[in-house]
Image 1: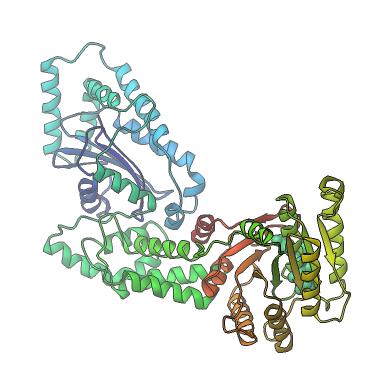
Image 2 (image 1 turned 90 degrees about the horizontal axis):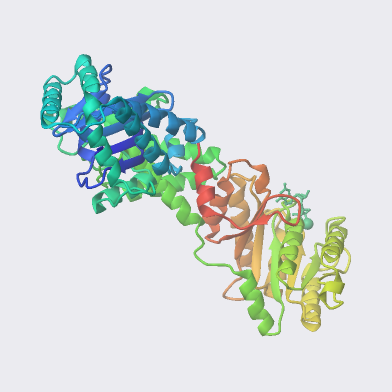
Length: 562
Ligand SMILES: Nc1nc2c(ncn2[C@@H]2O[C@H](COP(=O)(O)OP(=O)(O)OP(=O)(O)O)[C@@H](O)[C@H]2O)c(=O)[nH]1
Ligand SMILES: [Mg+2]
């Protein structure tokens, strides 16, 4: 039976691991020993290693930068191990080639490798094939003793290729052990119960914790470590196999993180975030806060600086996107309805970001949820703005004809043409909605640049006078650094021109054109970071159905993706 099987990236991230039934010892020690004494020294040729009572066999996959390690009691000679490693390697590569494609540890960090069933199947096949070759009868005591002797001799002469072959040939007898191991894995191909310690490790591994070499490093090794750490920035910048290994090598043993250790990784992360459209200023602040959070932290086993920083950053990003306050429009509309008043939403933002289009999509969503909507055409400035809304109103009513709603149109447009005072029109519209028992008033406003003081004042007035329930800032997902400026200035204008001591600021964000940005999702971070407000809707196209809510984890995973 196997004690463990683990797959990790050369950057140190444990991607997947299996622990044999009844095995309580963590595989950390032996694997660390293997890394330190064999892999880091780039010893090649022999792919086996003995650590205390365990035999370890490993295989490097240089193309995808993976390491496959299997461990079993050295007293056993398992003939199927080589085949198993090869099969697992091929299957794992095959199954996760997309995730592994770019060899970037960040990507690995975000992937969930559910490999249990495949592994159990391969293990069974490997065991069966070794059984087929072996005699059918039970092993005799003599044979078993002989087998043990051979293994012992192999252990003493570790490192020799011949020994490995010898062990391999011998193992016709070992199928029984293999079988025994299998039987401990339950019938559904699920992993058996595992020790809590391992469970914890496994959970951590899934989150992307990294391999580090164990803590009990000798003085000699510590000296070596210091030397290597000096070179670390170079190594981290290296992209290939050597670079990743250098990173691992440089960070052996228990040490607390210093700013200098993290600097190269932080620089890389900051540039990565900027490349993903996170505003530069915010990328810097984010990396700074991650550094502060980690400074002085003693890294755990299976971790490297790069992974620790990445994980902390990832957590911060999820934290930023996770709304502190839930905006539940449907519930709030119902509440307003029970108070016999319409629920009022104002849309604002710079020119052409998609205010009117997304207002129409939100109307559709509200109508689908059984509410009636009055659209207030308060963009009295841009030519065609009113007609644009009228078109939407017609389309929406044709999708939900009045006949299906007791003869009453589900959506109406309140408009007074162009050139009039927007705040006044909004006020009239709200009064009309109250009289006509509309559930929701959606107020469209003219696009305006954040530096245009008169227009910003007018918007602040519209909001101050009408006190909407919700002020939504509409921003394009395409923006980078500009997002911060827009939001800061919109909020500032609302605060400056508020007539109350509790000014109405931006309550939420509509992030539009999300369909056009590929994985450059940084605007989501910039906008939520700067306002502390949630992204209430995400616009993903130009039809009424292209409206989504934000999935923080998906966004973070796109953001971390290389
Ligand atoms: N691909 C895509 N295009 C969008 C999305 N939302 C809006 N658009 C397009 O963006 C363009 C501008 O949309 P509008 O709704 O007129 O923008 P606006 O903010 O109201 O513009 P102004 O009122 O002139 O300030 C239109 O061509 C829309 O079809 C979206 O989520 N995805
Ligand atoms: Mg518009």
